[in-house]
Length: 127
Image 1 (tube, one colour):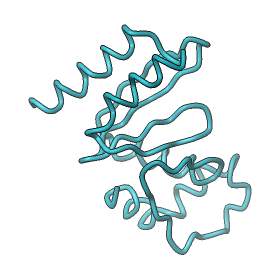
Image 2 (cartoon, rainbow, N blue to C red; image 1 turned 90 degrees about the horizontal axis):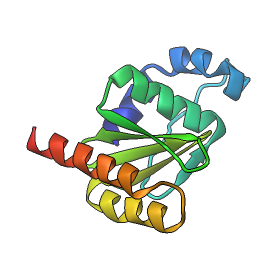
Image 3 (cartoon, rainbow, N blue to C red; image 1 turned 90 degrees about the vertical axis):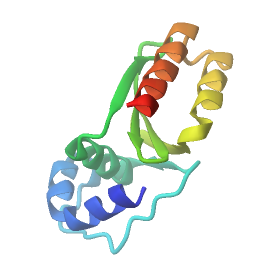
């Protein structure tokens, strides 16, 4: 997570410009953005995080939910960033399989999507 926090702080002006449609106040500079697992980030913070992840080029997989919405999982060291809609949640890498099973149980994704995401994570672990 520290990689993403550091990138955001070092590139805050550029990220704020890219997220102006969400953040609205391009001149605002965050003193710090502290990322924690199991916290849902929305709005401006979500935009800053997802834009930073795009810039960093971390490995990711995109799944389609059962209602047609796209969700993306991005691996950053020991954490997985889940982006869906306008929110981001961070999970520990070792809890992703359980979280994906919960998504199946709650009717968010299907079994095939779950298997694809688990295979993706396993392939990254071997690589």
